Image (tube, rainbow, N blue to C red; front, side, top):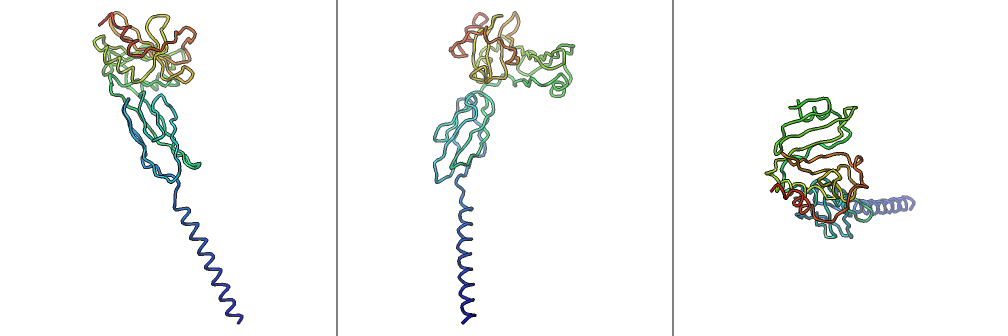
Length: 249
């Protein structure tokens, strides 16, 4: 009798253990959220859908709407050229999907615009300069009439100039429109663009002006921009630049 009771008790314990073990395994094997789309490459103005699988409600958020937005159906729309992330959330779980918006108009490759770099970093990236002076270096640069880096007394980058042919006005307009927003007019002539919707979110300001020979696209740190001297405007960037450059057309 004792041996039979022991057998029944042991058998019951094994059955209970197997039931609990089986439930735990099934729970772990059923993820609440699966993101099928691992990355997004979208052209400015175009859309692409992030595909997900879940039995629960899913939310989408853009880390930077300047480069790309997303709606509740998971449709990404590319805006300004650059990189950001889409955050997919479900039941407390969040998965990030890298997004890059690329341009339809690529007059020239955007220069390196890292304001922490020094002269030696720029030479390492671009090679031996075609123009080499104490305060600046210059390069022949595809799609332009020249690329120039200027440095402060500590040899840190303080400005970048790109010279554009006046014959390339239309291409330049489209190029800038896909990358920046207009924020106002410069006291010294020309217009000011930035790489964000608000100055507080920007890292770089761009002054576009024309001289006797070229259209000058000058990049500089947003910290050096006198915001109080800028007139806010809501006109589309294409119309602003067309008006500024109309006399050379």
